[in-house]
Image 1 (tube, helix red, strand yellow):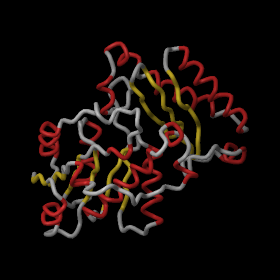
Image 2 (cartoon, rainbow, N blue to C red):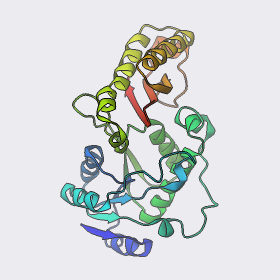
Image 3 (cartoon, rainbow, N blue to C red):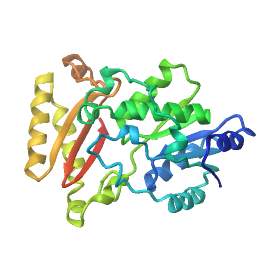
Image 4 (cartoon, one colour):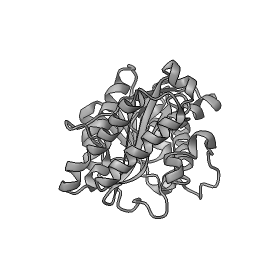
Length: 281
């Protein structure tokens, strides 16, 4: 595996082959990230992974400074997984001047849920992903479904800017007890780690209870009850909710009657750690 740190070296490395698959990451890799590499390899094109902790998507009181940076170990994992090229720029390379031009996602899908809990987050995500797309010119790009709202935003961005990129969503990779794998799981204390699967259990219960709902008002009541139960277990929920997969809006009575494809999504803090998860239903 070749490793480059500058955009100029990246473009030289990419030049011999017209088609690449991109896996963007912030590093501190785990089995979920390696699953993205494995999925990208199925396209039968070389795979480029990026590692960059993007300041733009962190709020002023979030964990940018303490976000784990493990580049050497990450590079070893990527090489073992069959990645062909690693792009690992520093902040000066990625943002050689203040990033005053930004990608502003559609508020209808970006200002709810995680966008409401983390103002400006998806603007930072969309901006850095657009830069990575422009730098690498991939034919395919692979993202995990754990960040469900992010995946929808990136799909819409690619559609509206007519980018010739196939966006591939990969199912969430989980630990044996059901916890969605995340770099932030490393923040959990042993006691918190034992409690962490409660978030997925709450989402499963919400999805099951919602099967009998016939009106949006019933869905809202079930969401409130599920959040209250999680709160009683010591969590601080931001949201637990049932939404349409297509646009993350609350399903209408007609949607519920017709069995529209939905997803339950949740975000909650356990101690100092904020976890997110979702289940398609």
